[in-house]
Amino acid sequence: MTKLDQNNLPQHIAIIMDGNGRWAKQHAIGRIRGHKKGAQAVRATVRTCREIGIQYLTLFAFSIENWGRPTKEVDGLMSLLEEYLAKELNELHKQGIKLTTIGDIDQLKPSVKEKIISAKKITANNDKMILNLALSYGGRDEIIDAVKQIVQDSQNGIINSDEINKEIFSKYLNTCEIPDPDLLIRTSGEYRISNFLLWQLAYTELYFTKVLWPDFKKEDIFKAIASYQKRERRFGLTGEQLEEKLLN
Ligand code: FPP
Image 1 (tube, rainbow, N blue to C red):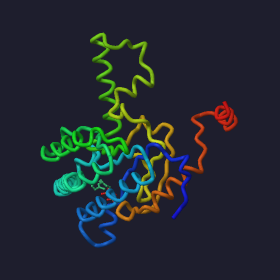
Image 2: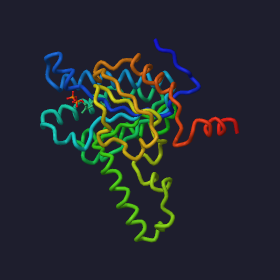
Image 3: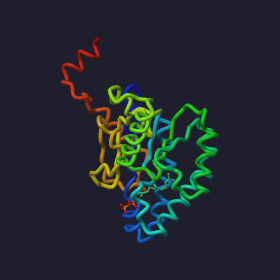
Image 4: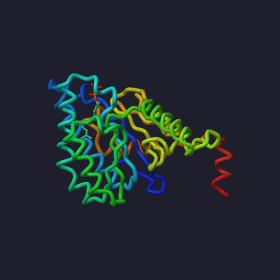
C-alpha cells in the first residue's frame, strides 16, 4: 500500500465519481447495475477516508444536469441513494460520521428527502468526519442562488454592498460551514469539473485517474493523497515567499 504522511493529509477531499455507465458497458450489464457497483465503491471510500483521518468528504452523487437522464436511470439512482441511507446509517453513526448535503434536496423523491433529513438529525452531533453528499447540485446554480440572496439581504438592509467580499460571499454558498476542498479526485479519465464546486475549487489540487468509479479502491485513494502530498500549494505566491511564511 502506498505510504502516506499523516502530517500532511488533505482536510477536505471532494470526488466526482464518474464511469459507472462505462463500467456497466464493459461488463455487458445495465447502467443501474453499474451505479449499484458504484454505491459499493462509495461505502468503501467513506470507510477508508474515515480510517485515514480525513475530516470532510464531499461526493458528487447527483447533479442538476443528471435530472435529464432517462427516467428509469434517475429512478434507479434515487432508489440506490435511499437504499444506501437505509443500510449505512447505523454504520455511519457508529463511526462518528455526520451527514450533510449540498444542492436542493427539495427536488428529490419525498421518501429520499425524508431519509436524508432523518439521517442528518441522527448524525448531527458526530464529529469524526463529515460526509457531504452533493444532491441535485450545480455550481453555477449555487452561485446564482447566493447572488439572489445577497441582493435580497441588501434590499432589506441586512448587508451593505460595500461590505461584500470573498469571505462574506462564501457564507452565502451551500458550503458555508465547510472549508474549500484541498483535493479533488475525478475518476474515469475525464478532465472536467462539470459544474462541481466552481467557487470552492479555486485553489484545490486536482487529481485525475483513469480508474472507473466502480473499480475505485483503497489503494486508489492512497495514490491520490500521495500525489497531493508531493505538491507545493502556493496560493499565488512564490515558493520562497511560502518558505518564509512557514518559518514565521
Ligand atoms: C457517474 O457515472 C455517476 C453518477 C451520475 C452518479 C454517482 C452515483 C453513485 C456512485 C451511486 C449512488 C450514490 C450513493 C451516494 C449511494 P456515469 O453514469 O456518468 O458513467 P459514464 O460516464 O461511464 O456513463
